[in-house]
Length: 235
Ligand SMILES: C[S@@+](CC[C@H](N)C(=O)[O-])C[C@H]1O[C@@H](n2cnc3c(N)ncnc32)[C@H](O)[C@@H]1O
Image (cartoon, rainbow, N blue to C red; front, side, top):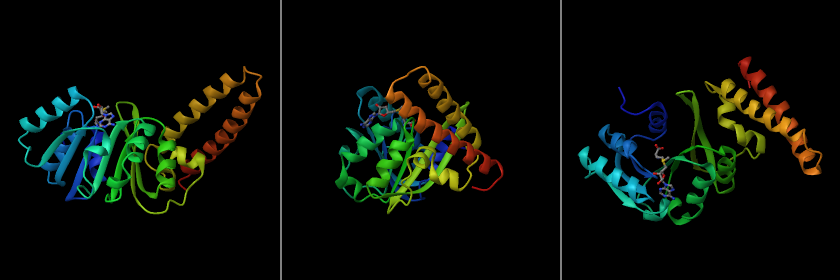
């Protein structure tokens, strides 16, 4: 039995066995400790920006007896890494735009990375678009539901991403392509969000609100189509 929660467990499943891994924003360092204890990773560099979680991570790694295989570094994102040091970069539990910013700031480190495993807490569409525009292909995606909340996991590899459609990038082209478990439930939630924004916009008479309402109405139609196709088992 894994000691990790379903979200972190799913992240592990997207890391190829034997990888050298960086866990950016490690906080409690549960992921790196588990990765080396189970032999999934040969070595992990765990980075933290902030002092308190950095100290928590150091303590966790020492107490778990894995300090020869997990190195904890204080620093901003990938800046704390040397080019060629790791194969896989994990960034979990931050906003999608924060994750994109971390990736954007370190092209020389990213050049040697063969896989990104990302778990954005918000704005997954912006993150997918950033990946597609910066030479990363969406290799896999997974939806995890834990304690009533959905978590999106995105695995990306160097390459050309064929999807550039803003709506599809928001909901997840790989999730849709494989009619991922929980997808209908997840899309129904997004549809509810669209409907709430739309009823707010209906109270405004401005041109800007009208333009937004038209765009959202088109998204509502598309999301309803995807939900219906997914319910029928074919997308
Ligand atoms: C919500 S926690 C997520 C912890 C863990 N990755 C997880 O998914 O359970 C986010 C952590 O990222 C750290 N963080 C935020 N921005 C960072 C950055 N630019 N570089 C390194 N760590 C960062 C925060 O200090 C915090 O500990």
